[in-house]
Image (cartoon, rainbow, N blue to C red; front, side):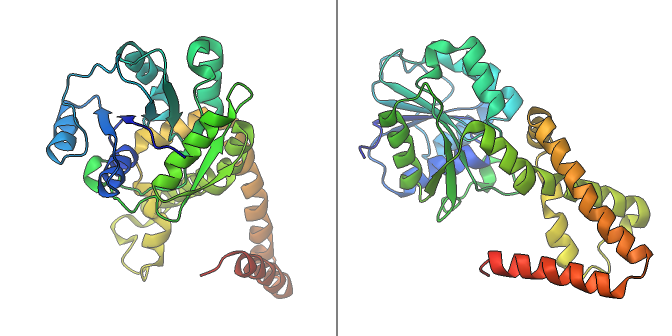
Length: 287
């Protein structure tokens, strides 16, 4: 699949910065441009040779351009509004790295029909609790999965080119509809963050400075994602709120089952419950 001649990364945080860094490291033959609301971030990216431009950006005359939006979900509309006047009207494909998809599709479908058919939704399943360009990592996408969420207005050639882009960064790809994406990730990503934030709050309320004194390291690992960017996760929680609430309700049922077994000192029931869960995980995860 032919590589894009030009790429614009809109948002140069951890994900956007890592895309630029990987492209540079892989000797990408095209031109890389960047945009960020913070001019200091833009300067840092240019100084490191990750992008060609500084604050001034006008790409109206470019051809074969991929625009990658890598901003918090609820900032997407403003980012698109800012980007469109700078871009050509032809020979352009859009994609994104956002963690929820229905919100993005609804914005495009309701207010930006002119770009909807050229916008292939995508989400690299990669990241860190660190969130700035300073923590960008050229290996972030290696052997990871990028989820592609085609919709009915996309054409196969554009989908294939976005798949090729993620393959170029080191990721394999899987296809999910935007609705399936948000349902699945509400359980596998968004709920674990809810639990980690809530657990950390509970622990510090009870133990304060002693929270990690006697943890042995596993608690630090478990609560690591509670150090994630609050703005990004606020946006995810709000933009996928119905799915996340359903996932919390399902989790509360499992938590109540364990609570009852412990209250009743049900040794046999606890061993059966814990053994069942251990087998499920052991059979599903290759360490």
